[in-house]
Length: 166
Image 1 (cartoon, helix red, strand yellow):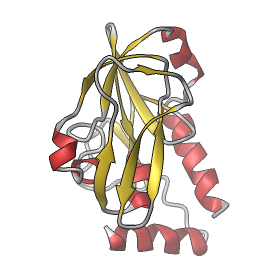
Image 2 (image 1 turned 90 degrees about the vertical axis):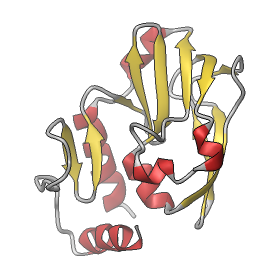
Image 3 (image 1 turned 60 degrees about the vertical axis):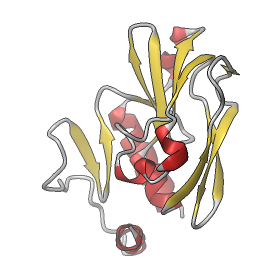
Image 4 (image 1 turned 180 degrees about the vertical axis):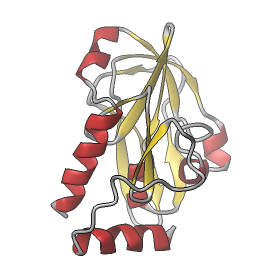
């Protein structure tokens, strides 16, 4: 993990673009950004949360990009089922060896399920941010809010521009 962050920082400092590079073990449906992945079919917020909308349920987590910048996640604070969340408002926190960061909801609605595995194994956010490391499942109160989120290509560009400024 430290090497991944160092390599990404070094590439940015040297103004090396990796947007066309593909990591050999990433699935074919992902776009590789240097050393993190962005999956097609998800929506992304500018605060680095992702949403997968299926039917009447939206699964939410933090992106590979975000977990890469956080470093090793050691604690996760999540809401209880039944809690209301609002687009752009915090619903929990992720504590890593580097910092504690708020997690914002990319959509409004009611939390219908919480990933309880994260309380015992918070590192799932690092090892599997889009699958085992999901955080909450929400019943959206305004599904149209998803339209204001970025697709994979827009999010990839957003991350590249953001990293170039740091």
